[in-house]
Length: 159
Image (tube, rainbow, N blue to C red):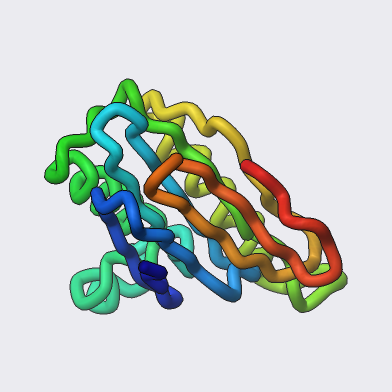
């Protein structure tokens, strides 16, 4: 069954038949994690790097921000039996879809936030498809843990 993750959203699963997908990863970043032993995984689609920009919004929707959404993704997967040392971590997004020198550099700031959070927590990124100027769609197949990215005008990319 296909499970769609919206913008500023998160889904986790331990069901082999599920494929989790998120669309429209422009400056936003998709974080997919998967534990191949517990067969548990999840996908987060966050918009902004830091919840201090709007603490009220972060309380209402922690998935909007890297610093509140990423810990929730990991905790939700742990609750289903995932273990940190076994997790495979993949990223996609963080592009500059407006082209040129985007004023706020949201994609780059989002990517920097993820790297900082993972560095602080000793989490390694297994593979990523970030940057550029195009939006992406990211998939996580629960049966295999396979992650791939679709970008308009390009072949699918295995992560």
